[in-house]
Amino acid sequence: AGVVASASVGADDVIAAEPASQSSAVPSGSATAPVPPGSGDGADDEPSSGELPRPDASSMQSATASRKKQRFGTTMEKHLAALRGGATFLRLAAHDIGLDDFVSLTEALMTNKDLRHLELINVQVGPDGIVLLSEVLKVNTGLTTLYLKDFQVGPDGFVPLAQALKVNVKLTALSIIGNKHGPNDVVALAEALKVNAILTTLRLDGNIDRDVRLSIDQCLDRNARLAGERRVLRQQPAEGP
Image (cartoon, rainbow, N blue to C red):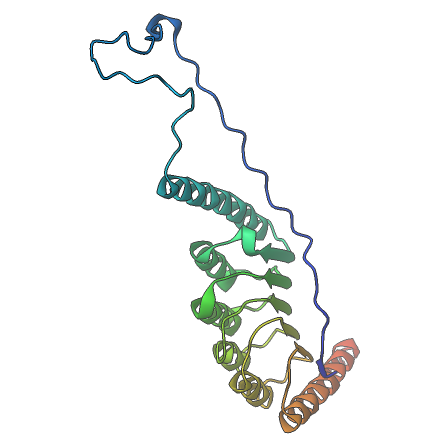
């Protein structure tokens, strides 16, 4: 066990297709005949160019945002339904989730005991999202594997996550890949592992100070040894009276 440098991992994500727009028919009784250019009451009538009016940029942006919000909400409802149905694996990517949806997800994970493996890829929820996830790790008793890729929360953004590891009693594998973590993040993780006796696998990329890396490796080796001892104890038959 140790700090493993990981190659970039691709996500098998499929973006849901936009729903086809529905055309609306005009009742025949309400249709009116087109008025030829120059035949109106006004003297300043201009000939039509034959082109439909184009929506302005703000209208297009608003419509796009509305469609994305609707799609995100629908996708998140499916994820939450899966959690309620006892799902043990969940993968979410950037096109699946927004910050409001992330709040709903973390609230559900606070009491969920079935999910074992959670992957969050390119989810742009910022430092606030990491704080929410850290609160989950403090109380969740089901999650054993957490994979975070391309979160881009900036230096010191993962310090709250490291603090949560001090009290987490279930997570055995943590991957933080493709994130611009700083030296304080890595030091915080190393300090947390001095207390945490459960985590056996930690994957980090980027340059890590040699002494900090050695400290992490020693803690992970200790935890792996303890995990082996725990497995042996569970396999031993109960002693009689």
